[in-house]
Amino acid sequence: MNYTEVRREIGRRLGDPDLKKFRGLVGQCFVSSMCQQLEDEESYNIEEVSGLVLDDHQIIFFNNGNQTTISVRDDAIKLLDIFQSSEITLGSGVTLLEITQTEYKRMNLERAFRPTEREMFWFRRGNKIHFIRGEDLSHQTSSPPVIVLQYLMNPDPTTWEDITDLVNTENFSRNFLYKCINRATANISSYPAFNVGQS
Image (cartoon, rainbow, N blue to C red; front, side, top):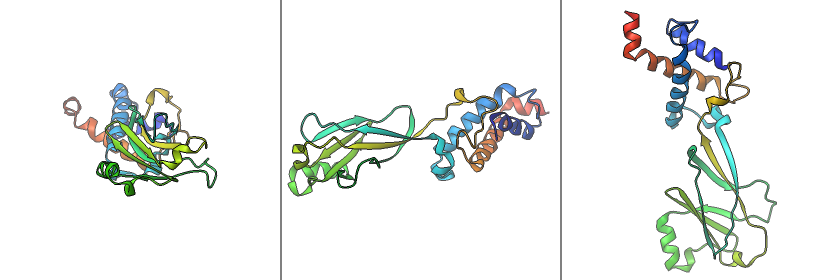
């Protein structure tokens, strides 16, 4: 299913299969509907939009002690997951554990709650992700850990051409595309101008 077929399907449902009336509207409304669909986390599985999933590999440098922070990308819809890169050889990585800010505060007071030699804790505060490594790990000369921040990115229709295959090239499932088509059709048909044109 290519981008032209998607737009024509929306036009067909609106009674304009040749897009004579809605040519300038359907593409824009389709992308807007796709973004609305992506906001509704319960309405799709991540596999249905795998083309929007980005694995951002970050080398975590600890320049001053046992703590460091990195910023979350601001061009993503959301951060899906944080995990250690699969490229790390067995036995050379660390155990990555998410903690709460309350646990972080308790760590500062009680040594028993701090990460061990092979652990690295993380928590998110606002747009920053904080990493804390074990004190013993700080003295090792091994290479810094590589962490993957997995994001759900915004769709970029500026890279789509009329013949762009949204299923096989952009990796959207047909099920997800039809949900977006349904939403776009409903959105356009709710516009006052559409109802005036139909009367």
